Length: 250
Image (tube, rainbow, N blue to C red):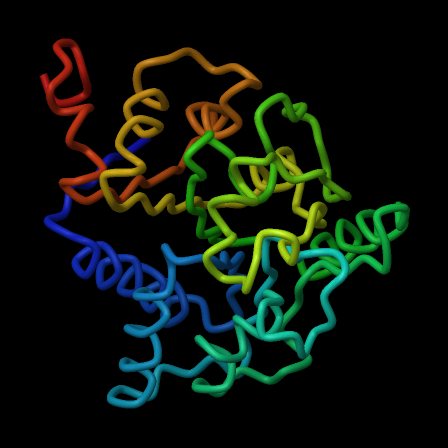
């Protein structure tokens, strides 16, 4: 994994946007794997700014999102479908029929995962996947203990993940208990992966990622086996790792 240290969240967001812009300009029909949550919001803001100022075109781009809650309609403000429209899709020139999120009718909808896998395959796979990392090490919604061979499917969200996302809902009871998520093996098939890590709350898990061996209790650790991963982390996220002797900084 290539590690890039930046000063703060804004610098991380700007650099991540520049990487995506270069990808899209180099390959106009790129397939981008996108993420939601607080981490990529700044990156999306820079992409929108670039589109306004420089007219980088997304007319041929296809996007595939990592995950979606089960039980929320697409027009629900807490759904990831709504999130993506609000934070990116409505502000650039990407055709709506080229933007995809996994979708499941219920926690028993096993066909939904298989359909998303077929979709990813039909567009030629993902050129660049953007990831965040959960405080427990999850990528997508693949919680600790998830098999590295997992493909897209229904997942039960850990209590810590639901608590971390509760700030987006009126009350804890409103936070969905399940989601549909790209599997770990699905993510690993991406040609290139960019992992964004920001803030002091992510410092313990980022340190753990670099200091421990690959194991399924830390889903993100599998990224060490991918041939092209770039980690962009700010100083707060790196605060513990930089103190450790024998770390990547020594």
